[in-house]
Image (cartoon, rainbow, N blue to C red; front, side):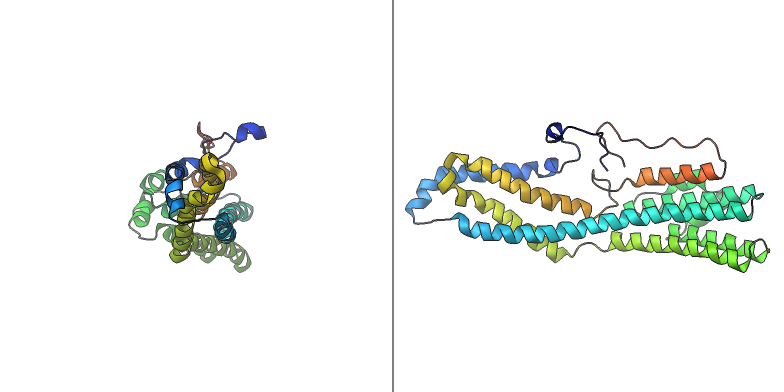
Length: 305
């Protein structure tokens, strides 16, 4: 995610990092080449009686804009839902630690053990969503006798959640938690289960491929033929106008492609490393563990991962 300081609107126009321009530069160059070809062969295909006008492109452009709006809306909804789920995860984990500290204030080892499980859960979920290796973070956080059990599980995040539930059940059997307090904590564990399921649903259910394919084919065909419709009226100004119109459509298409997978590492995806770091700092501070990990900061390109 791009985290930039406040900028004057004029200087923001020239920002490169975080914009999708770097992804569509080659496609814009191809449009520029097609514009040059249209200028060169304009008189030749005019003599053949071929007349492309702006009118059909105006109608097609309106249709493309509507469907691009739908796609961007769907992609942004996935992004917002994903961020909401991770916010719910932070709230639920803090609530569990708070309730344990209020109910069992003297059991410091329990607080640290459960906070370790909760921290490991969020890092494991991050690795699961980004399809990266969770070994380092699990080795750093979990006790050795638990580490083997988690690492050999094909569903590491769910296994850690099960361990947390087992700990709460053991406290209930020992009489340290009443049925009511156990139910309150179990509700928070259920919230975490819903968060895991929601994140897996977003990660494993992309926007329908046929919808994306039809839209991209239409956009690319529109941008390819557009110079031939503009050249009759604009002549040598065709490349400038054609590239600008193509930039509008291609950038919206590229942005939708980024946002539909909010758990990736692109500039406009969620900063899962920073969120997990925030959760770890919160839970360790609540349980009195020192030193706290350093908060994540944006890199020199203002990208927070």
